[in-house]
Amino acid sequence: MGRVERVRRLEAADLMLFVTVMIWSLNFTVTKYVLNHGFKPLAYGAVRFAAAALLFIGVTWVRERSFRLQRRDIPFIFGAAVIGIFLNQITFVYATKLTTATTVALIFGTLPIMTALFAAAGGIERLHSRFWIAAAVSFAGVCLVAAGAKGGISGDLWGYMLAIAGAATWAAYSVAIAPLMTRYTASRISAYALTIGAILLLIVGAPQLASQDYGSLPSLVWVAYVFAVLGPLCLTNLLWFNSIEQVGPSRASLYANLQPFLGAIFALLLLSESMTALQVGGGVLIAVGIVLSRRDQPALVVQETT
Image 1 (cartoon, rainbow, N blue to C red):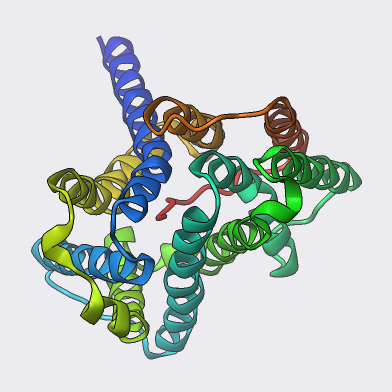
Image 2 (cartoon, rainbow, N blue to C red):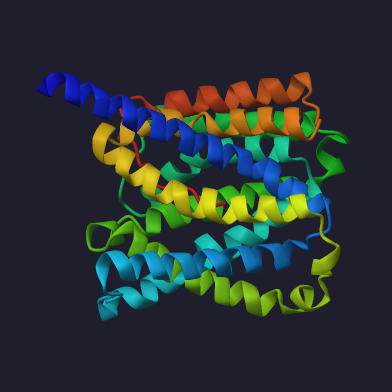
């Protein structure tokens, strides 16, 4: 009976992981949709993260009744939030605005490679020679994704560069908060990081927030906005970390690797975007690079918050 219960728990964890990755993948398309239908990039990012911050403050208080941080961790979490929430959201929304959701999703497939690079720079992980081959293969894939997009590399150059910066800032954040995860819950870290990021986004996005015509936004945009707050920023936090406790980070990382391809599929189906043969080839190279990089290396997996 114990074995049956264990199998059922693993199946439930696998289902939660799959739902989590599906939500993350759909978020590329949702973001592109709301930006195409009237929401200004910084206004969207600011109101989205402000709502998520309030939700996490409430959830953390109900569950923990404390927001205490050690004094030494305050500057650290502030810096992590500036990079991983504030800068990441700016680069993500403008990358999605300037190029296709398909392209952004595929470029974000380099996240595991970038995370390993930052982990090595921080002394958390040692990289073998095979990793550098994997990194070269993955970034060759990025070049193919950009070259295969409409207009080629020069067509949406800023969009490609911002997508790479978005993946890099989230990878840096993932590595930076790893030590904090040993002392605080994911909810408490998220409450602080989202609040700091939201305040900065509200300040920088103030002109767009003031000039945004909220009344003219279609009702489906607001439905998408609610999904973008409750799904990728809140629900997945609970599903992801509960699942990792059951199956471990290595198995969870296999699901995370599906995100760029599912993201591209959603964009193809829901936004009628196109994917060229070069982009398919680039996506395959990114996947090959990820597979090569994971051999003989520990999986460093964290939640995504785009």
